[in-house]
Picture 1 (cartoon, one colour):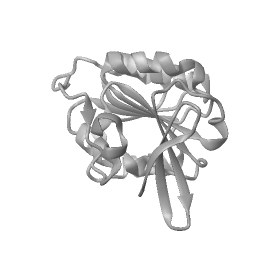
Picture 2 (cartoon, helix red, strand yellow):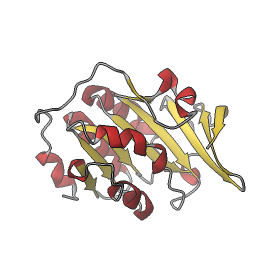
Picture 3 (cartoon, helix red, strand yellow):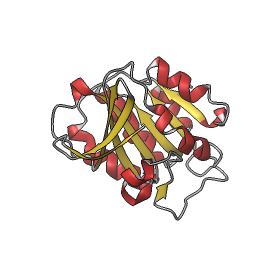
Picture 4 (cartoon, rainbow, N blue to C red):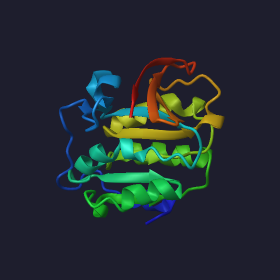
Length: 198
């Protein structure tokens, strides 16, 4: 299933769907939990991950969490993923591929509305998306949908599309340098608050 129509095949009440008591999911990466609010990825929240461009894949930061989520019965959805990100998730031997779904709506606002719909179903433990547009107007709606579905929502945004203030509470920026990568937590204006070397 790789179209928006596949939304209607998701079943929010499938057996084994965890509602969970924990508000966060440990990242499984040394140093990252200390950077995240409440020491983990939010179950029921939106994360904005800013990367330099479409060639800079940062899905490896989520793989340990996705491996755990894929064994808990709900779907992990990828909305308009670039090739490198898709390959990283779909070829990971520790992720249960039967719980992966790729959805390819039209890019831009259609992708964001698809993300919102996926979150609202409650059938997805995580929704990763590369909308390719400004998310400013959809931030509050996506957060509400993520809370409703108790889902982790991660929006990957390219640096060139992250020039405006953001209403999303948890924002991270990946920076590449000769020594490797750094990850910064940033505020609504894009200013660094704290960071770690990866």
